[in-house]
Length: 612
Image (cartoon, rainbow, N blue to C red; front, side):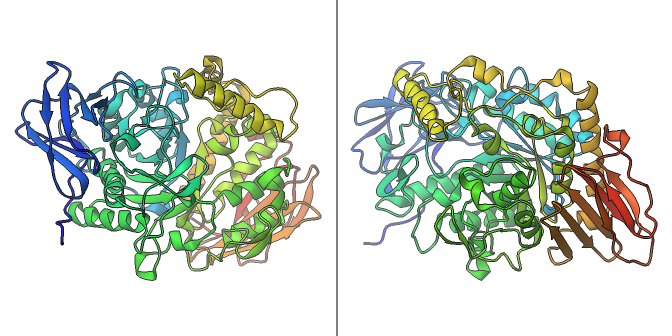
């Protein structure tokens, strides 16, 4: 029997006349009813194809609280847009079309132009809301970044969570301001020239308030993940699950005007279908782009060093526009003298970083002692704009026991060197909130579960995790309000002493990245890298049609002598982190005689031999 495969958009949507279209996927239910809290009326839904139940009604209005009954149990909408009473409360109908957008003239930046600023809504400001974030947009514009990446906003339990415990992928966290406040924030960003990247989680659903399995087989026992059973992308009844998540992608782009998605840990998505779920998402996004003429990007975090994810569909790839490369971070970290424990043990100071500059992946078919196997493939042919690099991010700060930022782990001079190392790469640079002014507050792991047993399990798990590292002291209580509060940025520091110096230094680096044609270029072929492991230095040479630049990275604790390459023109300094202007140890000359230069310890210097 052939069944019509047209599937509705999950959840509640309103048409121009205000009539609600309701769709719920519950393939094994015998009856589904819409329950309106305002009068406790119960309206049956009609069973359709492929497990969907639908309803057209005038009884449900925007702002109304509602639930569904499935197997006689009262549950929030699995595709709810708003949970004003938290994950355990009723859903609230929201009309996605009611917001008055003023960003019609907005055009997303080209991916190669992105300079990204990652932030966590709850700790970016004292209030921890989208509205208070709006008040900082002028600061970000002045800093020079042109894209903000917001950590996940899907509804989680309580007010304090990284966001990766979200249980309603369509819903916008109530403590942040809900869906309208997010639309307002995106609109304000676009008015100021800022693109918005949203971090989304399609590899698991959080533990508290997760009702999906009560509606249907959203999960499968075929695969195990670090979070339990995998999301069902290829088992029985998977079509409804695939529709649920692929429509979620379209919603963020179409209804919230999000410019790009960063998909969390896609290596944990288990799918052996002929068309991988990421490919399906790519195809649906491509159809949306053709319809609207807009640009939207799909960026993934993955731990596989597998170019299949970022190759276009026409080459048999999954069609993702870009990816984070943690290996650049790992190599940069050990080059700065930080410890080589855990997964950092695979990386060598200097040489691994030099390889990542040239090859993106450090492990591209090489044997990994940490993994006990050969790992990765070569990234040949993939342009630099497909790789996002950073000296720190939420993971590599927050997953430390005490959540120390780089500012607490290395010297002021080394912080400037690490920043320079990121901005001279042929990849997309990303900052983690506060690093630009050397924020000293930690960014710790925190949750706000309301289930006491779950909260205690998280506490014990966190202690157990770090006991294996034989670290002194105890991990901060992730449930503590103090842990959450101590992770907030201290904006009063921005204008003070060395913090102001660091901020100005970052502004200069960002300006150079935009102004200098070679730094702005993402050509991975136009780069030469010379590593000197014994002297703890790297020289990065990049060129374009109009310009050549040389970056000197001295990770050593003493000065180092260098000879710059021969060229038709004299080399002139663009920036040197050791200059007095940046509270450094000594000025590097503005021009270089005889191509010989001395670069102070733990410093970064950048030269050019031609105009911009």
